[in-house]
Image (cartoon, helix red, strand yellow):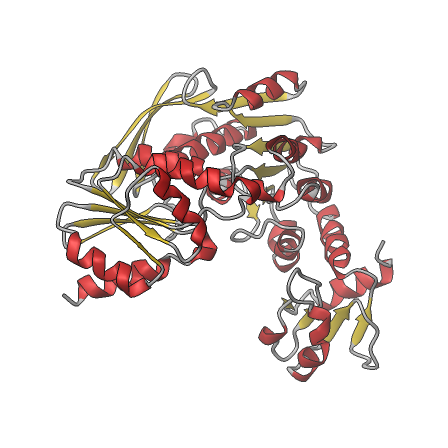
Length: 441
């Protein structure tokens, strides 16, 4: 345990001062926390932080400087400080959200709808780790302490991550969106990943649960829960998507939730995002919002890197760079079929963090890519090349300009181009290069 005095001192000095964990971003008066990461140990940069003007430094190692406070574990310091802040919160409900895909989208929709009932806190961006989540709570503590509802996003990269975050937040309403193949390489086997996701329901405050009803494993688990629960999915669920379509730049949704419902949504929403809406809808029904759909008219998805659609010179461009999995590809294909196009062209990069499933994953992706008229494989990461077992790509290249030039020569008005890869592949560089070429044409 981190000494109580260190936690209290940390909270006092960060009440008005920014918390910084990257020594390169330290400014005068900041509080720097040295964290040990996989590649870099922030404790190695204490002197740099002090030279940059850090008011105070918390580190795992002792120092001659009076501005350095030494603790056994700086990660634990963040957790303990966040726990202390949460203990002062007067939240009516704490909502915890996890899943392989859609966590941030669900959080944003949920927070928007809950704000119609009362002031709502949400974790910032995609800060959903044992470092990011406590930082989000600490940096926005005033909002948290003045809110009636809290929406918290839980991510995982290894067994036990979600449980640690659940023990911190202790949510009373827990949402499990899906359990797919994203990050499966970080686990010994798919069953271990499933158990990790299900651990969100280990909260001692649990009173309500929402689960994705498209997965029979989650349906079976839901049946074993003794708390109030609801399912969302395609059919036989408390929230079921009946159909959806696109009207210009809007999405038309037909769903069943206590009867037929219709909603017109701003922007082009993917099928996966509509599923996320279903989870958020059920959360707010549980919270007491009588008809959530009437509050969706003024909501727009705040992302530019997740199934973001734009049209340029008659070409429909869809960028999806945030993350990638077989399930998110399947969801995207359902959405693409609803959009107008002459030909479909895919620019695909690797699905990362697949471990021993890497080759099989990309072979399966190759089968999905058969539905496109042409496919380009951006092999900055070579794993994508396994997709060639099931398709004959028009181009395989790791050169950004080569891919962009191929697109410029081969794409015509009326075509739809879908760019998708895991975030670390940086496929957006190809997208931006292609945009520059056609804008200047």
